[in-house]
Length: 304
Image (tube, rainbow, N blue to C red):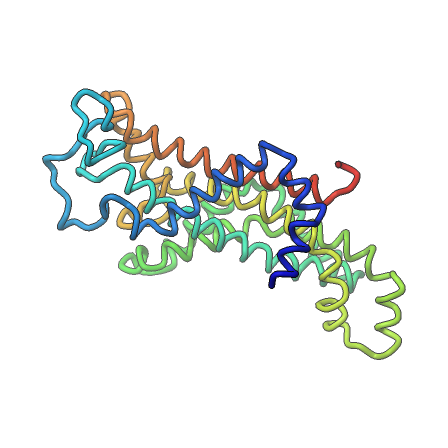
């Protein structure tokens, strides 16, 4: 363990990381957002979704530093008396969960399709890539809305809220797999004709094993970069769907839901209800995107 850490801190990747103040700041912001979301049940000042603790008399309290602010509610409260800071921390849990799960799902699908298309070639390659090309002609958010609408029409109304989280994850994940597939396919086309792959074929190793143990490790670098960049997209896509009212249920509000709720009161003076969740969403997505940009440059020697 100690030797592995020593090698990591002595690597070119760590050297590139610590020399970039923007990357270090982005990592700190991302870490704060992740820890705040993961540890929300233990560090949040209030539980905004426990109805027994809510008091409508606390509704629309401004931030603590304002004239009528209450120190117990650092960022103020919303129309139901929920603490905005606590709601942001709990909402970020949903946004991060959906984003990470959607990216993992799209990565698995895209890598599998890309490996098959690049390694097998021929008809399989043409068919899979044409499917990817067709999907790329549609905006990702439109595909997500279409999937959500089809599922809502196909399942009974009483189970909508129970499966809403899984539907959003699937809808966002299925819209992003072509990017992974095309990238992996291009790298696989290069790797499949190299000597180590030809040698593995000669000694009788199965095609599946060659793809998984020989080709995949050599094409995974670009996948990590795309996954990091797509995490920010997935979080934004979830926020967009929730803002439109087709994301997670109101009983499990994410940052997008909080922004939509606050938008109703933006021009009546209660600006903090929507501004603070919006700032939290921007900080989270921007930090992840900046880390993705750094990772892309760090893993590509031509861009150093």
